[in-house]
Length: 220
Image 1 (cartoon, rainbow, N blue to C red):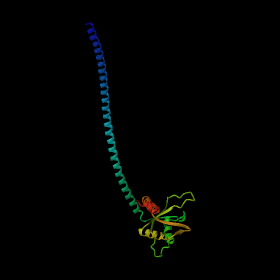
Image 2 (tube, rainbow, N blue to C red):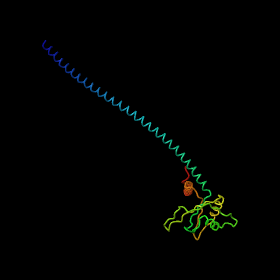
Image 3 (tube, one colour):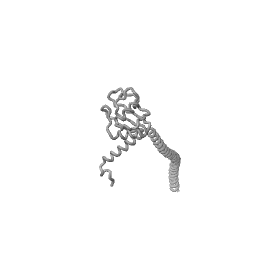
Image 4 (cartoon, one colour):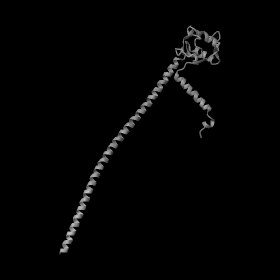
């Protein structure tokens, strides 16, 4: 009988130990559950912040795309306006001629327009029956001469009353070498800076194309 009681007590002790361990495990599981709940909450918060960040990024990207579209549209408008301005400027210069190479003070103290009216027919050997030149105005550019004696003479801008006079003079000047007291003179149409740049780019492109070997131009 005593042996049975001893067994019962021993089993009771073991059960108490098992119960204690189970309670410890239950406490650990509870702690894990609490930790998991905290982590779940943090993950949910992180997902919320990530979603918000993605929405903001998407909004910024949409705004950037809209801004790029507006900038592209503005660039087209600016280019169109610049083209119109260049066209108007060149229309206003149709009767203008530019003379390069005439030494400073060659015109003396008289009005430059009067000197040119007399000298241009002589420089170009215009026929005697060529109509008298009507020059509205003429000036050197820039207005003030350089103090450096070695600097090139300033160019001369001449505005004729008639476009046909300017064209005829330019046509004759381009066919011959024009000089004044040993200095070579060159005659050009007075073009806007924008049109001059386009012509330079066009000439550069033609030269580059002509210098490129045929084999390099051909694509397989």
